[in-house]
Image (cartoon, rainbow, N blue to C red):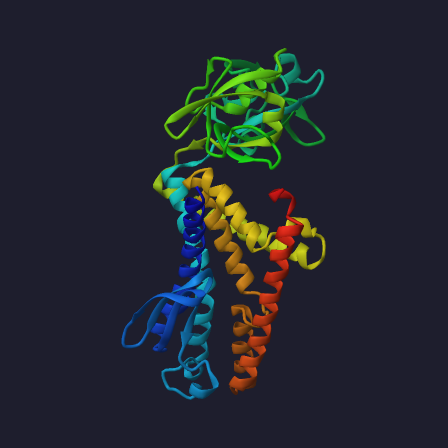
Length: 427
């Protein structure tokens, strides 16, 4: 098990780092810049392959990587095939394509995830029904799941609202699920003068349908269940493949019994456990059910999800800088490794999603204008273009060296925090 965890972590960090450094590498080559070294990891060399121009290395500590370019040091700053002698646009392209390749990796991974597995199946459900409303009179209830309006599939809450608005007061037929059964309800919308549209008097929201495969277990929950286990029976009631598991749990939670015998599958073997479903419900998270997507929609989804994650992370970074995010919400190297091992146990699809998430994080963090990061090199190149002369290589290298030392100290601090004051989601 430990060996599998190590392999998962190396695979996760390896693919993100190699894509990033390959971006720098390939555009350096295309710009005619000699590349001395391409390294995955830091520290002592484990493997080395030399060509006429470049040494390719794998080092002991897989926590980063680097590409060593000609013309970056003071003693070779005047080389014609060196970085400093190239036009500004060439230098900018070399710097930006590291993060650019991480964004590309996220799009590629999310596209593959959606095309192979599909997109999490989202259902629109009723949060509340207003008294004496058309919905109330038609017999709609809280927690009903809405699948169709007049035979048209409801993809999300926006679809449902638009369908009711377009009804123009005519009767609509809703296909809903209640307690695992499909039923149909007829509703006649009423016009709301204040809002200027047709309504039926419900508050709705979206929910991701969950499968019976365990994705996460809170620390401290004592049972013989493990991440990746699949619950296949509760008190002899078979859980069908693809069945909405939270709905099954809800039916049992409403029953009188509180402790149940469950049968679960781990690999190819079956096991039994006696648990409180209330505790199970509070301490376990389950993988989503997926809905297949076509090739074109999967590409669009890859770009769309990457864009949304970029925006979300930028907002989070802003809140962190402004001090609005608690230290308990920040994970360091140990925390990320713990998350990686947990995610890898939940399945390869969850690991891919985590790769995309971390790749986007690396792309943004690396473009922060802090010494030793690509963002600061980008700013310095722009400054050279403004002042019309190169920055002193010795001073620039000292600037980046100081930044690198600060980053190492920050990593040490975050590692200490992960061990003694772990983030709330790692407890």
